[in-house]
Length: 425
Ligand SMILES: Nc1ncnc2c1ncn2[C@@H]1O[C@H](COP(=O)(O)OP(=O)(O)OP(=O)(O)O)[C@@H](O)[C@H]1O
Ligand SMILES: [Mg+2]
Image (tube, rainbow, N blue to C red; front, side):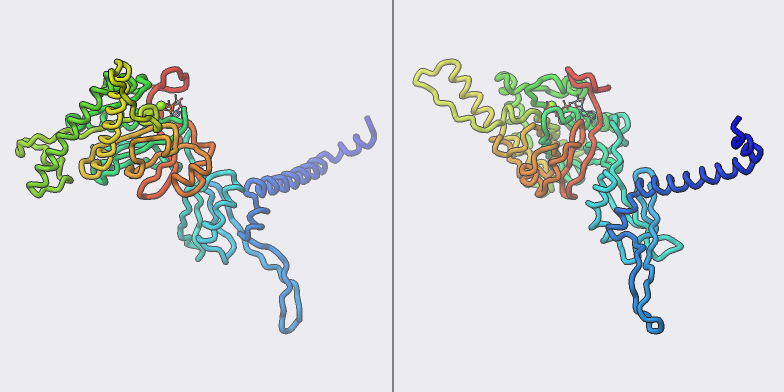
């Protein structure tokens, strides 16, 4: 054996102590480096969240002197929350709001909400940045319990339920505009199932009537069966005739009821209270109307067909189809306006976000829009900024725009869509 090594081995304890000291030091520096990387300390400093610079200051006795001006930072993660409990004393909540975009880029996560909390040991509030915490998927079976008339859309980025109050607030005309395969039909199924399950639980299922229009004819078979809904494929003239006939009749009934209410000076908002045995008055059911694949039957550019002197069967059919589609579109417009007072639920869905692609319905009347990914220009037209130009808006993720503003949500996975292996029941 090398004499040097054998000599060293004689002082084993000392050797172990030296190696351990080197190890601990290395570990400490690696940990510090890791920590600063994880929390982007250098970048936070550049954003002004803390300082430790030298500054020349004037001192009356000593003249110019270099002084270290430093502020401390304490920042840590707790679940999806990034918490600042010590930071530049000059900073307040407003500064964090302004830095939101920088912090999002730095940490690679969307900040959904900024809150603050008092700290007993400091006059500075703790700043809490709640970052997006969407689960991978959310199943309909995980939904919260609802009350009658609530429309459950899914959960927001902080896992809070997104619920529309179709009876209380009458915000129940929704327009879902999102690309192919983004999860529109799954979302509508989720809304339908939770809505009608709740009605059933409360023994009030006879208050609503489910009508579905969808050219595909596959995505709503189960819900239509389960909740005794009517399922129409408008490309089929017979279906279109029946559907429009039924909506026409519904409209007539609602108008008669509104007349009655007006004559008796009753606000239509009391519609539900009239539905008692005492009143002995026929109150029509409310509609839950689903219009999926809208562009296929309301797509624009269809000219009124001209009939020749002796029209052929084809020409007559085209004309009838055109007239029925127009009546269908007009009734939908009327229904959407009426939801405000009647409380019916209208849910239209389609792939194209361009208004010019549709003759009906009138988009402006829909109080709630549910939107998927689109280009920046379309996004600006729809919500006034480019935030829909976002490639994370897929597989059940949408933006909802209602009277409270815009926010992202994840719809529940409710059904297995035909030809797709990913869905679960
Ligand atoms: N909430 C969700 N969570 C997870 N995956 C989803 C969700 N919604 C939809 N998906 C996935 O996306 C697929 C397509 O969904 P869906 O058929 O509802 O899209 P779509 O927008 O209706 O498409 P199209 O415009 O072609 O009708 C589903 O089969 C499913 O695999
Ligand atoms: Mg669909």
